[in-house]
Amino acid sequence: MTNERDPSGHRRFPPGVALMPEDFPRKLAALKALTGLTWEGMADALGVDPRQLLRWRNEDGEPNAGATLSLARLAVRVPGGLALLIDEDVTVIHRPRR
Image (cartoon, rainbow, N blue to C red; front, side):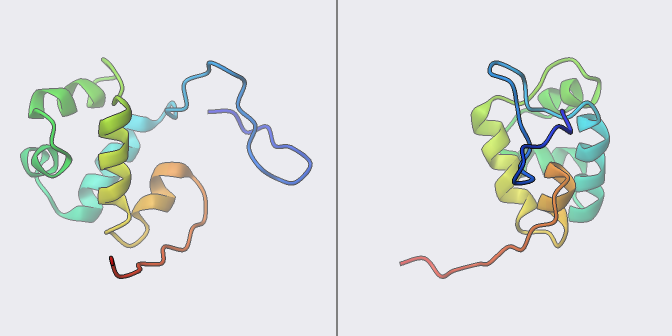
């Protein structure tokens, strides 16, 4: 992932560049540790086949858009999870659904 920032401090990403960080497998393992889930439990929580998680861990592919959204949804439920995935300090505000 690029560390270039625009004048306002936001990260800049060139068009067509994959946004998965190079250390995604490490982040995935760290998120798993934060959740306390097994790899199989994490796959179930994300709605993916456990073999797909193994591929991501072995740098043999990246999550598609739906799986990335599932990762974000899981990460916001764990203190520090979203910040871990996106390398940004974040505050998560949970609002009741209407």
